[in-house]
Every structure is written in C-alpha cells, then in structure tokens.
Image (cartoon, rainbow, N blue to C red; front, side, top):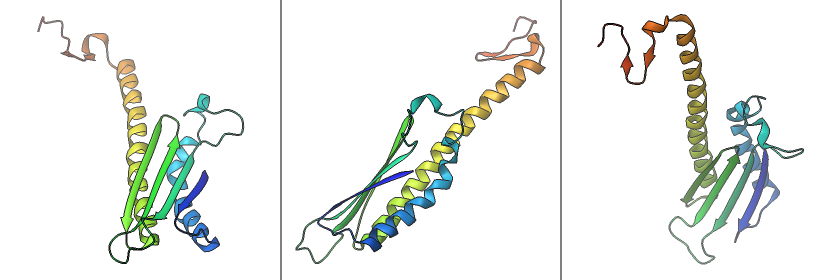
Length: 148
C-alpha cells in the first residue's frame, strides 16, 4: 500500500509521519483480498500499487484557540472503488485515529460485499448442478409441471 501525506498549516515532523504510517498500515490486513490473482488483475500495469492512500492533515487557521480546528482527510483508492473519510477534532492524533476507524469500517463493509457476491454465485451454481430441471428455482418463483 502506497501512502501519500499532505499537510496544511502543520509541520510534518518525522514522529507525525511515523504515527500516520503506523496507524494506516494496520489497515493492510483488510486489503488481502486485493492481493489475490482472481480479483482486479487486469486493472494494474507494471509497478503500479494495488492500493493507494492519500492522507491530508491540517489546521483550519493559525489563530483559533477553541473548538475543533484540526482536521484529517483520507482517501483510499483501489480497483473499482474509492473510500473517503474526514474528521475535525481538537487533537490532530485523535482526528487521525477517527479517520482510520471510519476507513476500517468501510473496508470491512466492502470486503464483506465482495465475498458475499462470490458465495452467492457459488450457491447458485451448486444449485443448478444438483437439482433436477423440473425443481429449479427461477426469479419468478418455482416452476412446477402442475401448471401453477
């Protein structure tokens, strides 16, 4: 996974960069489905990463003293889908954690959708193999020879 970090009104220190990479590298375990050959193989050319992550952090203005003035935005792109999360909080690190949690929730949902789609296709295929033609299910209901 390639991580690109952009800042606005905030200095990107080595510690902050390490913190961001540590937090977002934990999402790597949810991206294992994209490492398999059967998914999205035709989408990528040579040397192009399968998943790209853009993180933008910043401070609203330089003069605020109260309220949520730190913000973090993150966009994750992979084949066929783009996920985006934003957060505004008083602390920059808390905003980063909140964005990571939101992306994690969206990734779980997307991964579940892909695997469910595959399982559904497998079930339909198995059903067509094992059931006799007179007992198959179609979209408009069960077809019977009784004329119903």
